Length: 154
Length: 154
DNA sequence: TGGGATAACATGGGATTTCATGGGAAACAA
DNA sequence: TTGTTTCCCATGAAATCCCATGTTATCCCA
Image (cartoon, rainbow over all chains, first blue to last red; front, side, top):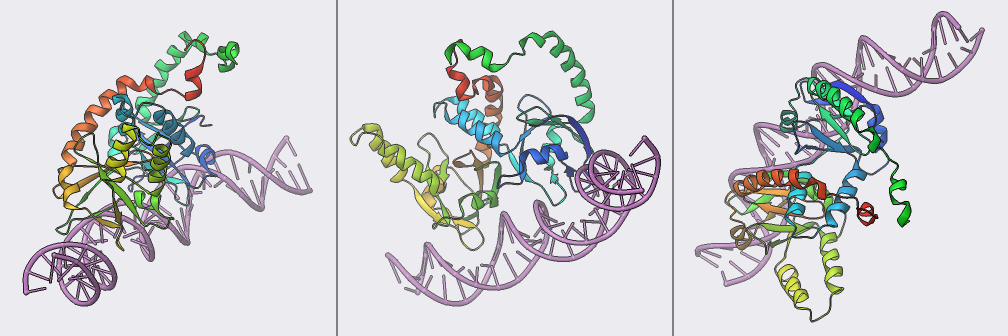
């Protein structure tokens, strides 16, 4: 599971260390790296490991092949994603266009979100974290165990 | 899995490099190349590796022998597909009629879509990608985990 | 429980390989 | 022949690998 938040430097070659906890979360499979793509919701990046992409593929393939929403999601997730593999020290090289989309300049903040994670400009993330806390406080009652929601049917 | 988008040049001989990530995705089998056919949905090409064709074959064979839809699919996919093998440098030679169908002129954009990929005219693809992003943003809620879709109350 | 030893992590820079691309020669077809 | 296709080699740019280093966290043992 991706948890916690860490900010690492981006060097002149565009390389940035992926937090060690994130790395151990995706290790084990044949692909030693992560998938990253621009969020279509705003100026940050979305990411995950092979397992997340497999989930997305399954979800998308459950949709009707000629559903416009399916084609848009395929394009915006799989078409936009990059496979970024780790070097010997656990770094990835962030492509310029991705760094640009997220407004990254020298530093990147990795935010663990369970099954996936996000990469933010540190300043933008600080602002967003503040409002997210307020929002979480207002909505804390929505936190329910999934099993509770399905008990009747299972 | 086919992911990410890349644009490569088509030279005077009709040769175009297949993105390295796509190549490694189809390597391993006896056929070192890809299958490509004109989309019956619009001016672009569809493609995939041996695994995709095997999947299509299985799906089609599950249909009734004289189902009109089956015959249309057989004709449009297996009948129209070409086997394009890689040269020593990972290029394929695009047949003229395929390039024409997709309006390719000097450059070709490969778009990874998970199990399959598409080949586009770069300009057409740029337009499509823009509208797809907007559409994906509006329809992201259609992405549901399959198990959740069967829950009572949803 | 202190404090030194050890390992893990993040970072920097140079060397090497891969990748995309171009063109020529040889095999083949019409 | 003439045009086409396949194979082979060359090249520049970009991505990747490899080694070195400081700093922090963890371990171990008295």
